[in-house]
Image 1 (tube, rainbow, N blue to C red):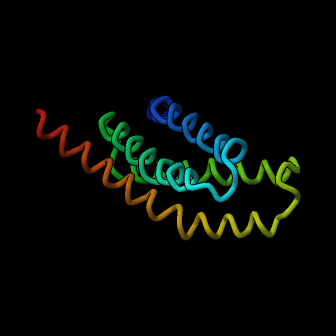
Image 2 (cartoon, rainbow, N blue to C red):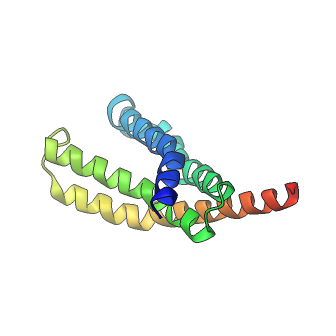
Length: 131
């Protein structure tokens, strides 16, 4: 069990780093309301979970594990936002954080789960075709 968890963490670590980089760019570099935030949202919500799930699937993890790994991206986003509120960078506005949690549940989790499912399914099919 421990070997499986460490293997999954090794596979997912580059994607967590990429997600943190996307969040840092969104919060500190790009002005609020810019069109680039939509591209970064698509990267964070669709591309990263899809590729991460495909990598897990190619490492012979079950499909449900690959799909659940997409929730890691939402968790990273929520921890980042909570850190910003607690540190006072964005002000101590817990109502805005509650709105962010609701928006993440409504608009972040469903496409992440769907893209992770598609990535895992695609990887399993391609692995089957290649052999």
